[in-house]
Image (cartoon, rainbow, N blue to C red):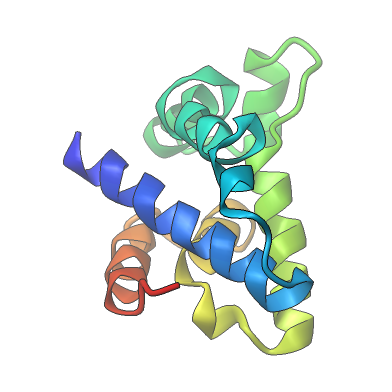
Length: 130
């Protein structure tokens, strides 16, 4: 659907901006390998991150509860990655430049309502340049 496609596009832009800002420019081809766009599509469209995210929105349970109930000892990588990226962005004073990363962290760990992702997508769209 269009919202998912927009999230994937904006998420990829933030991934590229993050790498370029903090680690220098990576080869564009890197983002089209399994660790880049393929992983992002899987995270947003299928797999454990997507299943648990859907349950998080619909049940009101915490991520920890859902991991325990749904993942048979496995853990989510998406929210943990968002937390680590947000910690780094906070230390560098750059959270405002990464609205998707920041919103995902705030929704997963700081009790922000899920609807905040809509504002984050709007903010990200307004500045979606590489």
